[in-house]
Image 1 (tube, rainbow, N blue to C red):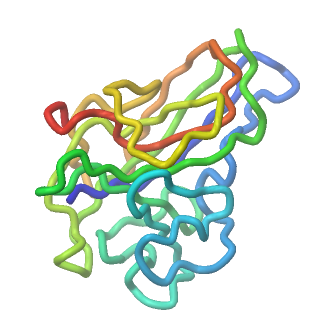
Image 2 (cartoon, rainbow, N blue to C red; image 1 turned 120 degrees about the horizontal axis):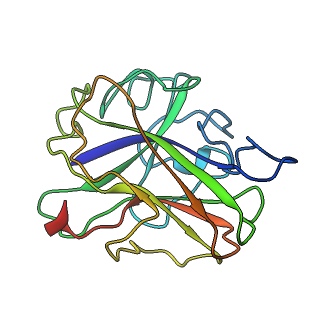
Length: 202
């Protein structure tokens, strides 16, 4: 398994009234309806869900060490911002094309022709307190896609992303920042985070 921890940001660059405003809801996963207590509880992070797999939610408030921060079943990592983060599996040996992802509706739709800044912080899992769940593989390709409409459940893999890591993510000691600027060509209102590349490209 390869486990990726993350935070996400989309900010407006070219309109003075909202410059610097993050359009991603609950970007560092600090807000929650209930503390995580086990795997597959991303729905406890306000504004987030999954369309594929069993994405995870990690928070200092976890009542046990399974989904806690910094030590949990999937690794050891301090939060990049605050006390929480989310996690997705990008590869599982023996299960072809298995992917987990994170889905959210943006705070407002993007405006066509406006430049935006995409940014996310990622860190691989590893060295967790559970041998069964700790990451054994490292992959490339974790990234971000935007959509104009609600998607149906599924992997949504087509070997493309607006923002993605083109190298294998291996450094478990720190957070890696991925970022780029882009001009919106559609009124995007939803964000999907995951690995959208085929196994042969990971």
